[in-house]
Image 1 (tube, rainbow, N blue to C red):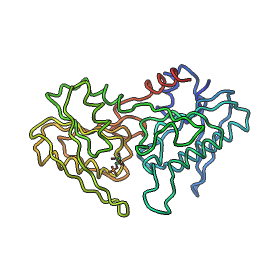
Image 2: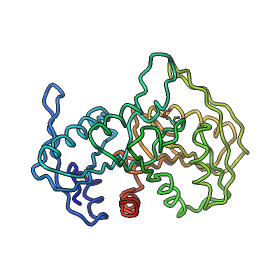
Image 3: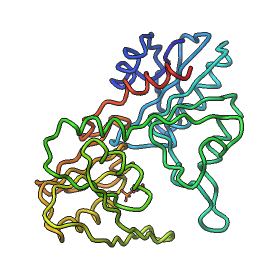
Image 4: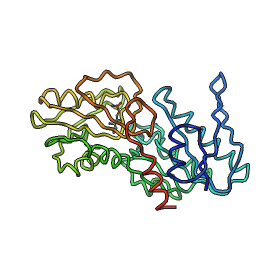
Length: 288
Ligand code: R5P
């Protein structure tokens, strides 16, 4: 199989770990915003990957590039396509929260299924409220745990008696995973989000004066993490490490200087210290 994707560091490193050639998907964008991915060579069997950056983060363009590339490759004779999605957009809309809303996480998978895709390897996707295996019948979402990559990276840190904080209940499973090698306690905060305005309120108590790791799947506006950091301040936490798999950073965030931020490289951003490409290659080689 050959890897097809844009010529980014992520794709080159992934090709290296997969031990296969990278065939470039050229990402042409016209002045009006329309796009035209160009792939000069269509291998028979393809692993298709695309990448995102927190600078000009545009999940819709990223998705359309996948869709056009799949159609393009098929028209040029590709017989098998497996998708790697470093970030699975729309996965937070994993149910219809308000009457009349679109069930976008399901629609995305249905679109790929209609394009003939059977397997998607995605790094830590949200979809809390759905069992991934049966969200859309006929398409399998394989989880590549970006949380495990963060956890392994953090083991080199010498943190005395750390406390791992989940900034909301949904993050508890990730916090538990990060806590494993440290044998650390986990504290789970309670977050309430207004589904109309997006405003959040976070409450909870944590033990005083501890070194803290806050673990979540993504940082978008930073609102969730900021609220957790306020609680850390209230309880006089010492060193605080914020770790998240996907660094979207949809708004500029100012961090206190004693806070360290770590993300993986699923989305290119200034805090992307953890490389998930070896893990993607490993999961792919086990399952393909
Ligand atoms: C939500 O449930 C997610 O796990 C994240 O906590 C959330 O999406 C982060 O978004 P933001 O940075 O905008 O608060």
